[in-house]
Length: 266
Image (cartoon, rainbow, N blue to C red; front, side):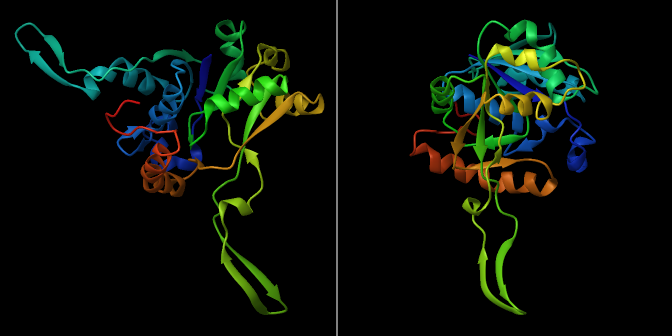
């Protein structure tokens, strides 16, 4: 099953980073966040990626074009210009990079990939969110539900403590847990090819008319993921991911979802 990653947005809420690079290239623990996302899928054997490019897309192209040179030791013969990679770290990934436009919306970016995706179900996620999600269970949910689309429902990390107030007296003060928040769209979708019947042009937002119409037709199912999830919307989120992601990798090795870091292949 192919995996689509939407990687073309401008990421204006993370301007401290995105003025220089596209959001999917923001560094988390020594690697761009898009690398971590791809590693999640790759762990479960899904290695065929289609990346929808837009804002500063050339930087993502350059990253994958020079992936081996960036990740491995090498010997360079200056006289001839020959480069020999030493003990290469290899990925089984196939990465298709497609320019989907600077101003294209999320639905339009997916529509531009239609020639590559219209023959079979496929997965899709955003280029700015990480989760300890079990991809085979997500797919199983989609297949069992027999609907046109499945979205991963997640609980966002709580930002503030909860107060219970009686008059002017605080009677309860607790730091909110992730479980206190409602379910939201966490990305990590599975779509049937019929999704393209719901997208008309570049300006369609996937989360608006297409998914709203699927909901009205009872064609959108939810895979509940109660575990770790965080979206990198702001600099605060980026800093939290840098703190939290290594711990989540360690925790999930014991749970069967070992997420890799640095040069460790899974």
